[in-house]
Image (cartoon, rainbow, N blue to C red; front, side, top):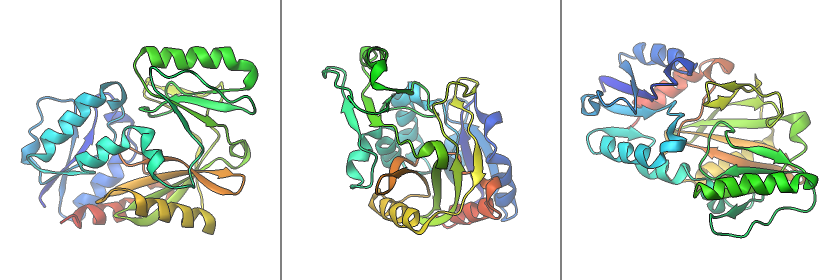
Length: 280
């Protein structure tokens, strides 16, 4: 393996804090990384030994184009994660396949009637989404605003997700568990999201409160099991868990463009570089 493309997007390359440490870790192993944007038509993808999808954060509004790009690249070089995983993972209906330890989720298609919870706060978001864009928290007294949110997404022919808001997140936050080649690497804590004062970064994602975290044994057990259920081969995955009434619950399985938070775990970029070089 001589050259590896670390795949970003034209508008998000400068925002990806994972890229510099990963570049250094690969160079230390004799591999020359090249930062390349998936939406840059000038890139010659066949010139790379491998392309690793990283901060392609603008794919949400261009999913079909993004998946077509992935198929074209995979035809001329290796792509990680591969196109089948990207297709599966960029629509959150994958949650239906990952067992009982998942936040209860109702999916509303474009032509479905709108049925919302009558008790407790809940979250409305599109099934194809990233960075908490088009995502909002409501209470039952906000039902009309929530219906308007759902109708807006339906009018755009988008599938909508409705999930109960897990209040324990307000104190404990989310636990994001990061895996390389199916093996646990490290974890971080993400502070509560969906607050009114969240800062939107260049229209791509909401800024998060991130800290290191040691996962509990229960979180490890749930995350390990969920990773084992996902399609393979996975170069990387991030399992986002929230506290549920009877244990950790999966909020999202990120296998397309998740931040991997190298700076919060010593040696994380090095571990990822080793996983990249081990791809057969």
